[in-house]
Image (cartoon, rainbow, N blue to C red):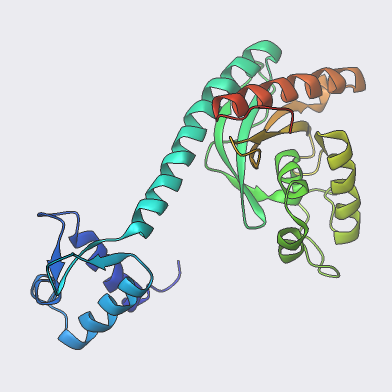
Length: 257
């Protein structure tokens, strides 16, 4: 674990003070409650105000309340909670149809984070867990999400000439080859993982969109190779598209893209 940054810790301590009382504080209040030097509090309050984390209370000079930025962060957090809850319900329905492991994942940097998961009832199945993080380029959900990024965002994550980490011998490690795969995913509208994160499992994934049409997640179906075939792949692609479409509708999306 990395070292905690004292200035950041103090700034967060100040923000958390607003959770108590009437939700307003002055600089002297903060000095007294946190036992910090006045100069330090002044600098931190000035910085938080400049970034809209706190604002002055109208008609009360020197007193502050929370600004719009914490509300925006909280709203984004709530959206992810909704996505996880709705994703779990849809994943369960998809898993009941195919009796394979179903995931819903989001993109964070160059990784995917699984926010929902429903297991297959088969004795042989993929072992994973909600909350797990994997390199995006090694997974069907990750490749689906990378393929949905604007070029500038994709370029900041996948840099030419910088080899990608491998999880199995089938993992794509060449950025150029990955870009070719992403082009194919954009054309087909679905992503395939051929034993790239697990040597015994292949997956299909489809995009999940929010009300604005933006891709915010991906839904995948993971199948052990003993139950994988090209005919089954085509069937699961359609099921993944249907499940992702249903989750998109739950998030307010209307339309085909």
